[in-house]
Image 1: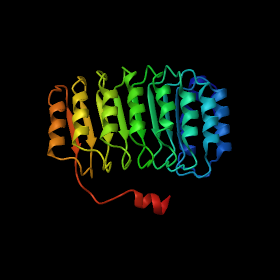
Image 2: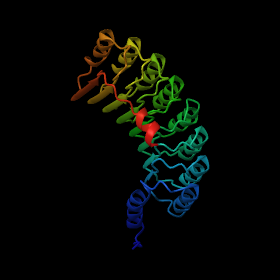
Image 3: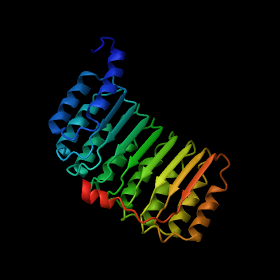
Image 4: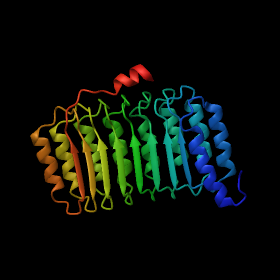
Length: 284
């Protein structure tokens, strides 16, 4: 039963929305149009979580509906959008989504999950970067591009440029697992976006199986870590990055040892022989 009190209705709606579609692969663009109508009728929404796992029927046209709906949410504080394996979503859809979020000055928590979305490329991150710069109140950002094969150095440059403008971030989580186009150059660009994050408390980045990252990438990254004076937890993964040697670990340690606020450090340079590509190719 829907409750009449505006605040209670808002909370119940958020809970039901998350539970009802998070694992429903039969939702199509028409379903996203109906969600757009909900946003238009409840403009006071503060938290939205949408998840569509491995849906082959959602495309850029559906993302446009969500984007149009987001423009009505003037009090939005948290937005999570998780679409793993939605292969019909392209850079155009990411552009729509970025436009819908542009100017969301109340937004504090942002999470995107595009893992195995093979049509998301470097070019798509340009519009996202422009929108990111307008989210002045953002505290938490979580971006997952696991096995997005077309994500490379230019994408990291755009993300870094967006992060430069955000001075209130507390938590950053970035996943580039098996994004094989990322090189040492991309790591340098991303590091430049972190250098002004003096309020950052938690940093987590996964570059596992980014085989083109070498020692010099960790050198550039380390140089920018020195400014993260509030950092308490760091989790960096470079599993199967075979071009990283003891020299790279030394570079990283030079940047970390000057930070006095640490409570937990996790560094992963392990080698393993498991690839998620097996599952992507056989089960998606």
